[in-house]
Image 1 (cartoon, rainbow over the protein chains, first blue to last red):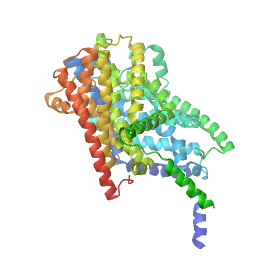
Image 2 (image 1 turned 90 degrees about the vertical axis):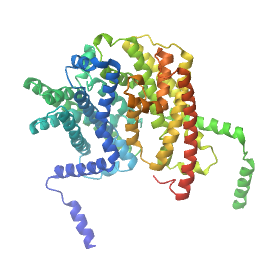
Image 3 (image 1 turned 135 degrees about the vertical axis):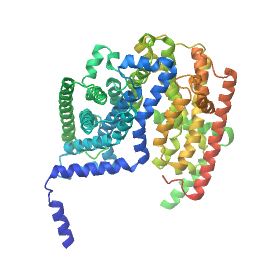
Length: 289
Length: 289
């Protein structure tokens, strides 16, 4: 009896920094899940390199000795490995983010843990956004190894400040996708096949963000659509940072655009999710799958 | 009275069961597994639609990075673009081996239906290879929309010198992929989680079996390895009949090697499946995943 009262008291005690505690617990949970499958972690890490080697292999086989010169003329970058690996890092990160956020409701529902979030005093939107931030941080840590290797292969190393800026850019490129993912999660609950929709969105983000080619290959209207994606700006800026060719005007402009897009998509995600949540609560569909 | 009635029903049911043997039994099994495969394939229409919608995005994403290695004047070269068209179709065939056939056994294990399958006297190969029916439809769809998108995106004339052998090699390629998948699937049954390995293997196979370029452009040491892989012959024969590109050894020999290796792979897959089944039943590891 005594221990029961103590337990209840402990549960009622609110931590001093509630949201910090919530974020840390989500981060710890995500870290546990992320590191549970070492094989998958290794694959995620190796994927940008494998894609780079595949593209380079095909490129050299098709174009022969002039492959490298053609590549420099077409992209303005001398190293295809650097170019493709940076693109691969951003592409895999954005895919993980969209897929994880899109399937957040469905997966929790399938595991039977979704309703449990509603028994806590936490704001559910904030819980999902914290999931996105935690995943972004973990992705960043994993891909730091990739970026270190690829920059070192070019014979240089980035300063800690450059790393910080590069991380901020990746984070700003990924967070708005959490908003898109949240909107998809809520919108597609009725159709159940969330993964098919997430895969469709991922393919267009991958095509339009210019991860592996300059966007000049597209007509003007497609380029305009591409500029609405945060990943487009992130990939351009990240390349400039790594190659030390970013001008301060470029940098400020793109950061401002990315901040604006982050707000826009997160607000959109919140709006759609809240509408779904109100309807699901009134119809008793929170736990239904 | 109630017990007596249920006994009567049971007796009538078992009396009504018609057992079939020999080739007729095989035909009955074939008809049922094909129905199951098509039912499962058509159960998720969102995936079929997503495959069609995302096709142009993936085409652009995979082709443009390689075009960066060529001078702009060659970007619309019919031969280069046609090689990509067939490569995209070949990629589908390779993927089937790993993801569709290779993972079929694992999926049954995860869903908890593998033990029930092994309780029946049905032909194991037919059950696990049932995806071939759905894959024939999906491959036809892939060819159709890849063709349409290539025409729309790149405005090229699709080259097919000998349509009949092309059709034959694609169909045979599916059976090669099935044989490879059965063999690989049997190993998956033994070693469990194969997701990460699938991703890595896919890139290796794509790289060395000449899916995107003729194996003649590979270095000597890699060419030897590529000649061991049956997918190399599917790629070589397809390019020969579709684009008129030369093969490494006389095309008749390549056909013979492909037919023999497909037969061998399927037989080896069948034997290994039976061996692992017997062994798993002894050790009690059938349901363990």
